[in-house]
Image (cartoon, rainbow, N blue to C red; front, side, top):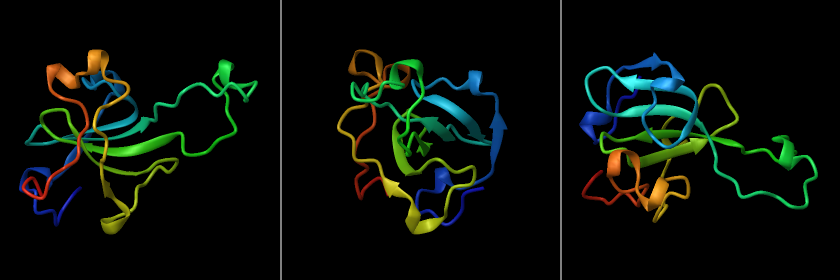
Length: 127
């Protein structure tokens, strides 16, 4: 449930979906869809470049924390807000921040979900 945002389309009830129903380029661990709109809410794996100094990294094991993040994604597939991952329940309010990515490293061919742009800075006009 999301409430209190000035972005009215984001407010409302989100229903748990199957991770294979996710149509974004993110790798979801938990996935929720807005009941009435096109927004999604997910715990996703963070894209990390390979760490050549970590001998276990090539096997998918790592010692580093912060391997996931919570995302609120709008109906165009643009990541708008993020929260630190590595938790089953994200925090509220000021613990969330705007996504400040000029492009999404995981988006194929520099494009985001369904051909729309990748993550970008949310403007005050959008908020």
